[in-house]
Length: 95
Image 1 (cartoon, helix red, strand yellow):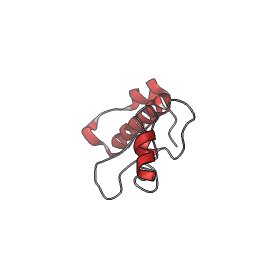
Image 2 (image 1 turned 60 degrees about the horizontal axis):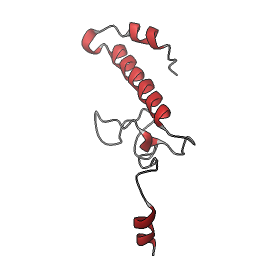
Image 3 (image 1 turned 45 degrees about the vertical axis):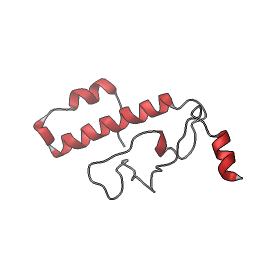
Protein backbone atom coordinates (compact mmCIF):
# COMPACT_ATOMS: atom_id res chain seq x y z
CA UNK A 1 0.00 0.00 0.00
CA UNK A 2 1.00 3.65 -0.29
CA UNK A 3 1.82 4.09 3.38
CA UNK A 4 4.22 1.14 3.39
CA UNK A 5 5.77 2.26 0.09
CA UNK A 6 6.55 5.66 1.63
CA UNK A 7 8.00 4.07 4.77
CA UNK A 8 10.19 1.80 2.65
CA UNK A 9 11.40 4.38 0.13
CA UNK A 10 11.54 7.76 1.86
CA UNK A 11 14.92 8.50 3.37
CA UNK A 12 17.14 11.39 4.31
CA UNK A 13 19.50 11.07 1.35
CA UNK A 14 17.22 13.25 -0.76
CA UNK A 15 16.98 17.02 -0.61
CA UNK A 16 13.36 17.67 0.23
CA UNK A 17 11.80 20.90 -0.88
CA UNK A 18 8.47 22.43 -1.83
CA UNK A 19 6.64 22.17 1.49
CA UNK A 20 6.51 25.91 2.04
CA UNK A 21 5.95 27.32 -1.42
CA UNK A 22 6.09 31.01 -2.27
CA UNK A 23 2.56 32.24 -2.86
CA UNK A 24 0.99 29.50 -0.76
CA UNK A 25 2.73 29.64 2.60
CA UNK A 26 5.02 32.65 2.21
CA UNK A 27 4.78 35.81 0.12
CA UNK A 28 7.35 37.00 -2.43
CA UNK A 29 9.43 38.42 0.43
CA UNK A 30 9.38 35.01 2.16
CA UNK A 31 7.16 36.31 4.98
CA UNK A 32 4.85 33.64 6.37
CA UNK A 33 1.21 34.51 5.76
CA UNK A 34 -0.62 35.42 8.96
CA UNK A 35 2.43 35.51 11.23
CA UNK A 36 4.29 38.73 11.94
CA UNK A 37 8.09 38.82 11.96
CA UNK A 38 8.59 35.29 10.59
CA UNK A 39 10.22 34.41 7.29
CA UNK A 40 11.09 31.04 5.81
CA UNK A 41 14.18 31.27 3.62
CA UNK A 42 15.30 27.76 2.77
CA UNK A 43 14.84 24.89 0.33
CA UNK A 44 11.28 24.29 1.43
CA UNK A 45 10.30 27.36 -0.60
CA UNK A 46 11.54 25.89 -3.90
CA UNK A 47 8.83 24.87 -6.32
CA UNK A 48 11.23 22.72 -8.34
CA UNK A 49 14.55 21.08 -7.64
CA UNK A 50 17.56 23.03 -8.90
CA UNK A 51 18.74 19.72 -10.37
CA UNK A 52 21.77 19.35 -8.12
CA UNK A 53 22.59 19.54 -4.45
CA UNK A 54 20.69 22.70 -3.43
CA UNK A 55 23.32 23.96 -0.97
CA UNK A 56 24.67 26.77 -3.19
CA UNK A 57 21.16 27.83 -4.20
CA UNK A 58 19.98 27.91 -0.59
CA UNK A 59 23.07 29.85 0.49
CA UNK A 60 22.60 32.42 -2.26
CA UNK A 61 18.90 32.79 -1.44
CA UNK A 62 19.78 33.35 2.22
CA UNK A 63 22.44 35.89 1.36
CA UNK A 64 20.19 37.73 -1.10
CA UNK A 65 17.26 37.88 1.31
CA UNK A 66 19.54 38.90 4.18
CA UNK A 67 20.80 41.82 2.13
CA UNK A 68 17.27 42.70 1.09
CA UNK A 69 16.12 42.69 4.72
CA UNK A 70 19.01 44.99 5.66
CA UNK A 71 18.06 47.30 2.81
CA UNK A 72 14.43 47.37 3.97
CA UNK A 73 15.51 48.18 7.52
CA UNK A 74 17.79 50.96 6.32
CA UNK A 75 14.94 52.44 4.28
CA UNK A 76 12.79 52.57 7.40
CA UNK A 77 15.65 53.93 9.49
CA UNK A 78 15.63 51.04 11.95
CA UNK A 79 18.49 51.25 14.44
CA UNK A 80 19.74 54.36 12.61
CA UNK A 81 22.50 52.28 11.09
CA UNK A 82 24.21 52.79 7.76
CA UNK A 83 23.92 49.62 5.69
CA UNK A 84 25.41 51.11 2.51
CA UNK A 85 28.80 49.53 3.17
CA UNK A 86 27.18 46.09 3.16
CA UNK A 87 25.60 46.73 -0.24
CA UNK A 88 28.94 47.92 -1.63
CA UNK A 89 30.74 44.82 -0.38
CA UNK A 90 28.26 42.32 -1.77
CA UNK A 91 27.46 43.86 -5.17
CA UNK A 92 23.98 42.36 -5.10
CA UNK A 93 21.36 44.03 -7.26
CA UNK A 94 17.95 44.51 -5.71
CA UNK A 95 14.83 44.51 -7.86
